Amino acid sequence: MADYEALKVELTFKAVKSSGPGGQHVNKTASKIILNFDVENSQALSEKEKSGILMKLASRITNSGEIILESGETRSQHTNKELVTNRFLELVKKALKKEKPRKKTRPTKASKLKRLRSKKLKSEKKINRQKPPL
Image (cartoon, rainbow, N blue to C red; front, side):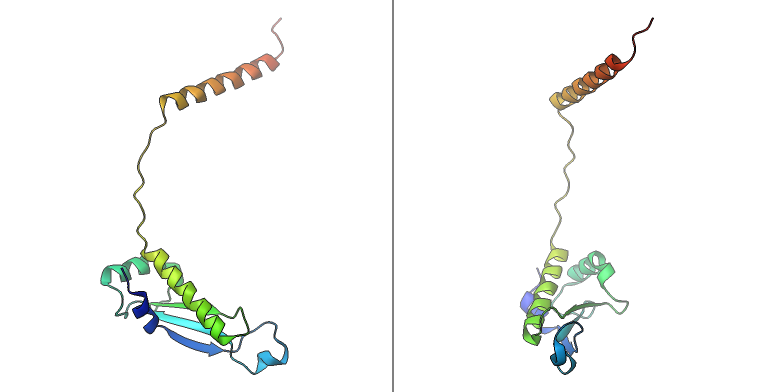
């Protein structure tokens, strides 16, 4: 499994001016954080983990093989950095989690009988609604 502390070292952060509310303060502070992570050149991930991430997060990865996340939810640069880092780690954990193989199951005999009985009752109900033949 990937060493998440080593992943944190490979992250690059960039602070930019955030849009949205904030009054005059918003025009002079860079509180929005953009996180970049280069999946293909990562030393913290094995080749198997890289291929799994590239496959499962294909829609979130750029053509150059980077994951880019941003956070401008709060007015604090430090808080935004924590939020975007946590979101990134959750994203990677989810991508690296192995899915359990699905076990094929069959309906039980009792469930088949129950379904057939309910179908029979519905059909009888509809037959009773019809006009009797003359």
